Image (cartoon, rainbow, N blue to C red):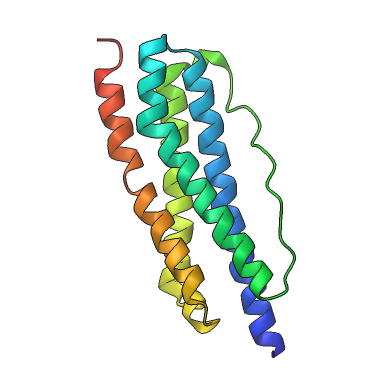
Length: 153
């Protein structure tokens, strides 16, 4: 393995980690929103938003860990994100924060895919994992908008 390939693989892992960290921020914000809702609305938020973001978070972490393992690189552990903010932000504010973090994560993964770095390091499994994560993330913003439109009714 050449130095360039090792460096490219580490760069790829670092960018995926940044995207995973953003998903952690989104999960934290969704958790804070959940705490402010009545039981029925909280269940809806969990089903429509929290679970898909959690699934994307898990997909990205698995892709990260498997790639690192396949190429004998250090596997990073991801700590939970700190609370998203003060309760005064309200449910809508927390949802906006969550959507921003999801969109940032998706943008980071999109840039990686566009850079062709995953192709250059020759890892089909990683490319598939990133594509699946992005498919899941693509559903979040419309679901959040729909949830907010029904909120308070």
